[in-house]
Structure formats: structure tokens, C-alpha cells
Length: 110
Length: 393
Image (cartoon, each protein chain N blue to C red):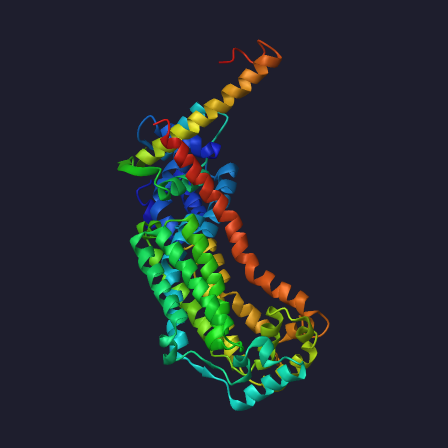
């Protein structure tokens, strides 16, 4: 799973969000490291929707602008769970090994 | 001022910015634009700075990249869609080839048989060596095939594949496909002419067999039906079939060349070393068929390009091209004023028959193998993650 995909799914794990909300949330989650733009976001949403990982939740019109809210599907949360566990395991392994070489440097491995 | 942004105050800087963004979004395919433009404008405008009247540079490059990706992918694009749509539609093609074999029988003329047999005799090939059936005029296809067990197994296999695919029984479809392929092979080896009604159909169905097996292994054919517009694959495949049909109606007098292929596949050194004389026979016999071949190629080209405007994505194009590509070999092998560059260099003359055979087989198998190389690992990975995902839950 690409990082962008992972972050978008993570953003939606909190509840349905619209496009701009996802962009802001992804910025927050990644510590402002990932700045999503419209082209990338909608390419990803399109793919995730086609794969059945997300679905449209509702539409709203705010200040004459269309807002579509997306939510995670069951399949989407299952895939996100898998991916998060995988990342967690890899990170734990990395920290453990680093801690074995130079204790304390990895900053408190699990 | 267009109707789309009529709700904005005319002359406001943001109205100008919005118009510029809308112009930029025209890069996306029409179908995508219809669904996404308003939403994307909302996001783009929300992230615009106060007083900004030109699209941000980062957004411009992002939109250009995104639109390119979307155009290449097609709205329904992706390997899983292309493969599942192919798996769903291709059995139709296989059943059609069976109908063709019954509908277009071929009988070798006495003269053609005579010259073919004389070449065999000139190279000391005896009836004892390759069987007496090679020394009589060949009759291929037609209603009498309905009495042949191998052909009936073939037809039954194809029908089962089609039904199983519709019912979503992938394993049954794969098993029936393998049995049908074996029956096809058995039948094909029983003939000594490489005729459009038999050998060539076998030749043309090889990639479809292979691709269908790959598609079934990698994707669920029913998945395509869940997506809007999968039926657009039908016109594209119909064109591909029409292209093959035209190729099949190509003049059946290419007996010499046929011999070359037939003999070389038998791996008889003594016979294959005489391929120059075989070339000569080919040249004498082939006089017509190039116009038909040209129309066939044109149709094949249309079939391959059609998925793009239909929004099926380039992967669907690639699969159709793979289904059509034996036509390219037929074209290359057809001697004549406008075609036939290949026989001079390929096999008949400078190159050995073995080398030529390797080249033909390579051309025939490489595209499906490329697809296989990409699709199968992906499917295995997807299955593995899905499988491991079920354990902790």
C-alpha cells in the first residue's frame, strides 16, 4: 500500500470526510510532511472507490460548493488494519534491532 | 462567464481563478470530469490563498500528472478490471472459433495436394515415417467434424468455460479450459496442412487460451460486472474476432509455407534442411489474399485502439492486442508484393528452420508471458495479504 493511500484511509478512519478535510487531516497525521493536492487526492479516491475500500457517504452544498463525504467500507478498514499491523511489526523489529546495537539510541524500543 | 460559475460575483479575483482551474481540469477525460469537476474545484478553491488569481504551480503540475494517469488508466482501468472483463468475454471468442471451424470447411485441391506430396517425396519422407494420412488430400472442418470425439470435447470444453465463467466457478472454468486445449492440440496434430479452417484457428486460439487462463487465475470474472461499462469490452472483442475472421479467410493456398511449419515442428532434421525448396513452392502458390490481410490488420488495429476512447484503459488494449497478435505473424508470413518481408529473412533462406521456429514461438508467447509476469505475482500478493488479514481477526 502506498503511503498516500495509507494516509487517506487513516484520515477516513475517524469518520466520513470531504476532499478538503482529507487534505488537511493527511497533513496533520503526517506532521505536515505530506501535502496532498487535488490531482493526487482524486486519483487516489477514484482508485479506492473502484476497489471498494471507500464509498461516498453524502453530498452537501456549502457556499455554493459541492462537498462529497467519503467513508471507509468494511473492506477498507480491514485493509487498513492489516497494513497498520504490518507497519507496526516492521517498525518494532527495526527499533529492537537498533536497540540491540546501540541501546538507548532508538529511543525506547518496544 | 460560463454558466457553471454563474453563482460567483463577476469580476471577483476568485471567479477568475476558478475559471482558470476549470480550464485546467479539461485535461481530464470527459467521463471523469462530469463526476469530479465541481468537487475538485471546491478543494482547489478552498486551498487558494486570499487574492490569488492564478493556479498554484504545484496544483498545475499535480493536475497534469493526475489527468495523464486518469487517461492512461481509464475510469474503469486497472489490471483487475481488464483481466476480469477479458475472462468474462473471451470464452465467447473460443465458442465462435468452434462455429467457424464447422461453418468454413476446407478441402485441399488435388493439385495442391499433389505439389505438397511431391515436396514430401522429394525429401524422402515416406508414409511409413509420418503416417499415410499426409499423402492424401486433406479435408478440414465442416459438419463431419461434429462426429469427431476430439472436436466434441473441444466444443464441450469451451461451452463449460463460458458457463462456469458466468457462474463465477473459476476452478471449473480453468479445468475445462485445459481439457479443451488438450483436445484442440490432439485435433491439430492430426492434420498435415496448415489451413485457416484448422491449424490457423488453433494458432489463433493459443493466445486466447493462455490469456483466459491467466485472467481466470488472476481475477474474478464476476468482478467486471460489478463495474459500470464492462460491456464496452464486447464491441472491442467483436472487432478483434472480425479481424481474425478475415485473416482466416485468407487464401488457403499457402501450402508450401504450411509444410515448412508442419515439417519443422516435427523436428525432422533431414526434412527441415530442405526448406529452400519449400520456400519455392510457397512462392508459386501464393498469389492473393493481401487485401483481405490488410483489412484484417486495420480491424485489429481498431480493436486495440477502441478501449481507449471507451475508457476501458490501456490494459484492456494490451489484452486485445495480445489476442490479435498472431495476425501479425500471419501477415509477416504472407509472401506478396506488399507483405512478406519476413519469409526472406525468417527461416526460409538465410536463417535455419530451428532458429525461425524459435523466433515465431517467442513472438507468439512473449506478450501473454509479460502480462502473466505482471498479473500473477500481484494476484498472489493480494491473496496472501487477504489470507493473513483473516488470521488476527
